[in-house]
Image (cartoon, rainbow, N blue to C red; front, side, top):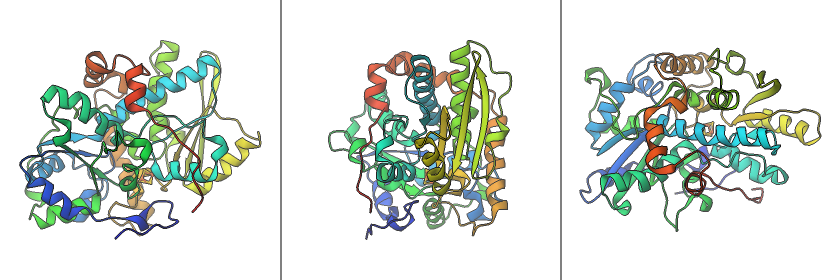
Length: 381
Ligand code: SF4
């Protein structure tokens, strides 16, 4: 059953979707596709005896194919898409004197918190949907069309580190004519349970690659899983768009790590852009209170409800407060980024193709309609 509780990470509203998913996987009339969040690949191994932070991307893909998914895709691809839309929004606000700071919007616990506790500031978050929601929308429009499949027959499954993602897909603001773009969300732990039920063990699996057209990603998409990563990925792109120059360095180390508030400054066309990362909702409240009073100014702020970001999400293998485990998962994520030839979202060829063939350009009418959302004040629970 579902209980409603005042739990910032949504851990107390967890609904078990395993039975439903097994049924869907055995339903031949459905085209069941799966996407995995950036944080899954570096944590799922812990359920099977691997060290925290071990990158199991290739084996995870094989495992999901063995479970019976029709296609195995990557939320990292959609994270790249989020970067395109968010960097465009940020660049526009900077150029046109728009409202600043822009706040990231991919964490549903944070979005909930904001709607309940900062109803007077709902014009500052980015309007971007979260990556897995963007994925769901693209799957049921562009992908459905390309594959010649009725969107009604496509089932989008998200494997998420996050329990809050389960209710996110049912937000009225994210429904499309009463239908969800993401049909089923399971957590990392639930995926581990399913693999164990199916007798699939990582040791014996070969490595495979994600399917296309929604499987290719840059290093920018990868780092969404760790605190500071969303804003770092966004700045990598926004900087190049605004200056027309390649970014000299790629890694914003000041924005990484488990500290409560992290800040940095970056020169964009002679203007010093101030960036902050708020790790956890207590730190976010303190930071937003100061901004509301005019005591602090920032141009962009990333907010993640879970300490450490999504690698520390409530759907991940339990870490029992052991920060070493979170650090190792973060190292795993940053290694995925470093190992990529392409580390900026706007250089991802499949993202370019998606805009060329379908979305036109970031912030286009179509992109606004499909990839952006809205917020409204909600009663405090
Ligand atoms: Fe979910 Fe990530 Fe937000 Fe935690 S930080 S609630 S895992 S989206």
